[in-house]
Length: 285
Image (cartoon, rainbow, N blue to C red):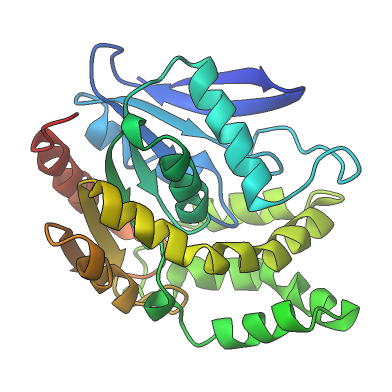
């Protein structure tokens, strides 16, 4: 059974889902954009008999508080700080990370800061290599180098319901994706003031790409067990990003599934059934 909680982290109410038993290995699920922990609603039931699962919403996302920009800096470093403090507050000292989309740069920051706590990493379309950046990222990099207000405003399309729906359904077979996920994400994104916070994060994403060499150095040095399971039809983070892990992790396990960016919408059971034996085989779990 999944239970629902909030906890105060430095004055910000953070929402998280919890499932499984406290005597099981810990698995932390880190969501992506424009979603929240509800994206794991089909995965959690597959995994809950095997793990203690914690799935938080970031500040400004889902059911967590959304502080004003004057009170909270919307950067990936800061969100990673909040997630790091949440983990500490929950007294979690050994855990595996499931990272997706935005969850990858957040999770890898945490892993770099606390390598001794990481038992394994599951990357589901969670990119840390330039090889994994699809064609759209060329325009974003040009924006990062020349951040005009006009270009910033152009990224408001990222929050449009049609754009969000396409993130879910593109690359999938017809009629397999429930409208529930993208409809809820559209509602979250449309809340007053949320647009500017999300635009801050789109601009700050440049820091993640700049940190790719550091993330890769972490992998090379600590060799965490890693499972890369990707929707191979994702146009944002293309399959080359999954294959690139092989450069730094000779033992990496890579699976490419016939689906899109939000692979859990169509393949939650299959992904869960890959995670269970993978984590069972990790000696330090």
